[in-house]
Length: 364
Ligand SMILES: CSC[C@H]1O[C@H](OP(=O)(O)O)[C@H](O)[C@@H]1O
Image 1 (cartoon, rainbow, N blue to C red):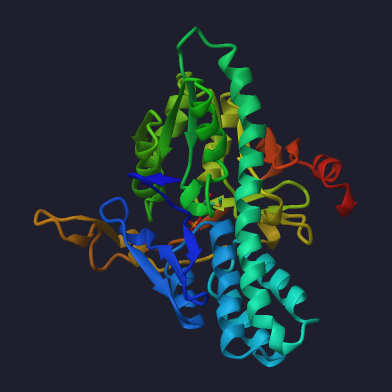
Image 2: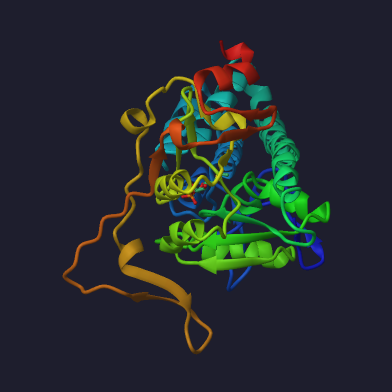
């Protein structure tokens, strides 16, 4: 997407044909920093410490991590070792394991001499496939926005609530939940987005708001706990969020707080949609609450808040007493029964085994 006068993806291969550059998202919206990842260790820390984040982008970054590893040592032993090292960086987004396994299955049959060049090519293909998936999700989600827009008075915006960041920053480009929003804006359909700040990492306040600002999409930043109130008062026409892992039954694992939004939407008859690229479907899992591992991150992310200090430096300040421990589950699971539809690249599915198999018959 455009940042100022330049078009960016969130990750790209450098001219050396070996290292990759990423947007280090920890410093947005205050600073736009680009960082070069040269080693597998660089890639591991970038994923673990959320320099890059978002299920699809985590997968693509890991795919490039495998390519970097193959350039160093293309042996089977090293291929397995880098798979393990990167797979343990974050446990919840299935795209990480999906991308690592796609790379391993692709590379295993190749001769070791061919693996490095093939790995970089395949990682680049996975990155480009992500962009195409998101464009298709955008087109399918746009139809829903158009239907809602037809019920509004002329010029009245479709009010959309989103949680966390499932934007172009969470993917290679376009985003998943934001793709329909960007396409509606490009189509001249008035939209307005309520952006959940999304404690504790504030991906909404720091990333989604920054994205929408940059693309001229009208939006209002709200605290996480305001969504139910707005829905009660008819201020929200639809909710659209991303996902880090969706089960074969249509249960959706996403950023902590998503489940509460789905409950509020259900209680107020607000349509609740999930933008779902198919690599985020874990066909091996049925019951999301029981089977999806939920990442527990450091309590410091709850006890401290990052911002720009009076002298312009980016600082973290403590917001809770020294003696108060914090818990920090990073995701929750929304049961399929609370979901209106899953917006995939192949169309909108009901959140059910039947709905997913109708769009993905090869998975029957
Ligand atoms: C398009 S997937 C975005 C998904 O990933 C985010 O998690 P995190 O920022 O911790 O990587 C969040 O759950 C988003 O919905």
